[in-house]
Image (cartoon, rainbow, N blue to C red; front, side):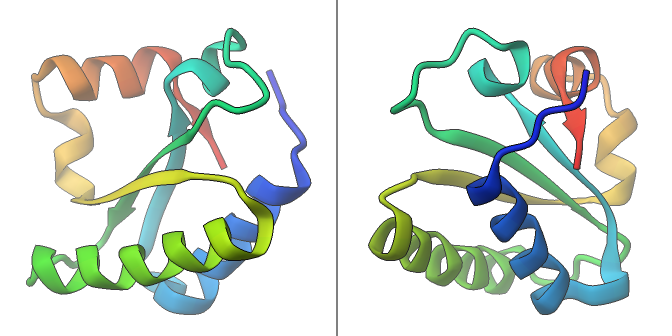
Length: 104
């Protein structure tokens, strides 16, 4: 299932600007990925990076981006950085991301 959302496309492009070739994959998950989100639902985003040495620094970068999107569009993004190897981990969250997530 492909979803086109101009705000989501802008967020994905902004991630490319910040992380470039460090991105392994970006996944939309949660209600918007399942198709049962409302217009005011947040965007749950998992950002899988090829190298993740300082999770706190990446959280800071994503926080700045999230605030800019709230200010510019009113859209709330709940974006979290993960190591590329986290994608295959056996956890409830990673299972949900693999099952319901949409690669962006």
